[in-house]
Image (spheres, rainbow, N blue to C red):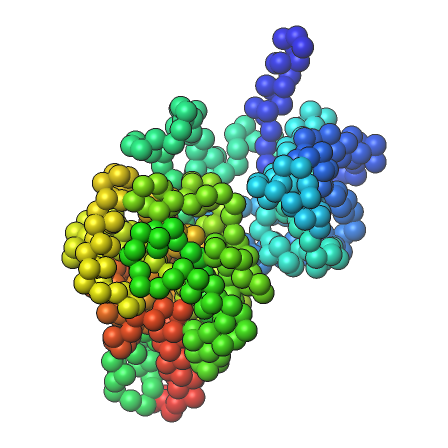
Length: 545
């Protein structure tokens, strides 16, 4: 290919823009097909061609999609900092209505990943293939003088329902296609000060991910609950026919929950995440690793202690297998392929495993938020050692000071635990980068729980912590999303000394102190029950005016 082709490709890439404004003029059918044909020529995993192009010209469908996007824009804006909120609300989304054609790229995922060449390990490669199709279409549209805008401000299930998609078919958002009514000289978000394109050197790494001078993580704009909502919650409580603050710490907790999620919350969901840990084979626990599976299997049937507590508290539950040695039948699976290490000799996980688990956790958090409060629970023999190693790396606490008895441990086991943690810290030279810490010293349920915290808060739901493990996961999540602490509630302080340290780092005061060390979300469910009772009292009690 000659210089002219190279220059043309470079010009198309350089001038591609996310177009927001369109003329109403129609597009010839053959030109629409030209754009679609470019998408259909994209590379796909195992030559599976998973894309399905839904071409929407119906004005009623486009209007309904636009309302969905507007609704989601307002929801997301309320979660952002004041500056980012204003900038998001300034964005033009009328393209869904203005553009004469909408194209929804849907990924047909109904074939099992193990049956598609290349998807058995990278199970999302079909979605990546569809993203390649989107880029092909986008560049082709630009070359032919058309504009395209990619809108992902949708609840995926809402958009799927609008288009009658069957289970197993997922969308990649909505592509507006039409004749542009603007020619932006630079990307719109960059012009509006949302962000800027980083220098290539900032995103290019040599050979491997570096131990030092790591690239900065993408900035999270998640904000704490709005200050006006916080004040309104205080004012609401002051109107009750009782002395202000008469319920002590419970009053303060109710204020926090009301500011984050509103006084109308009447339920919640226990997200119980389980995984096994190779570090358990080093003698740091009194229990056989098979106990993780036993507890998870009981939880699936509704008889595990945590799930039973959730049911008694009027909560629903979600049992998730994040990496139990023997897969748990009936549990939601977010297992990732690949080996895991024992901390002392090798890293717990790879960065790609951490990324996948965080992503799955955010999805679970958003799903669990539909029920109201999101309560965290975990199951994993040996995960107290994992949690303590993370605490030491995050806070600088000495392993001998940090380790606790755990469930059933004796003095010799405590000493061994401290030795293993110290060796792990020495081996990894772990820094405070949260994803690096999860890979070096963490475990699957910790990554998923951190993602659940983010996903729940992004969806506007308060998160109720349980013991040490869930609190450490939340602390890691706050490193990824600094606005997260305002969405967190500490249900109780366990007997683990490290738990007290973590709660102090989070700035949280525990609602209860019952000397528990059971895990499974039991304390979170008990705390949620108390909170829901308190909210019910606030809704129904007499008021001074």
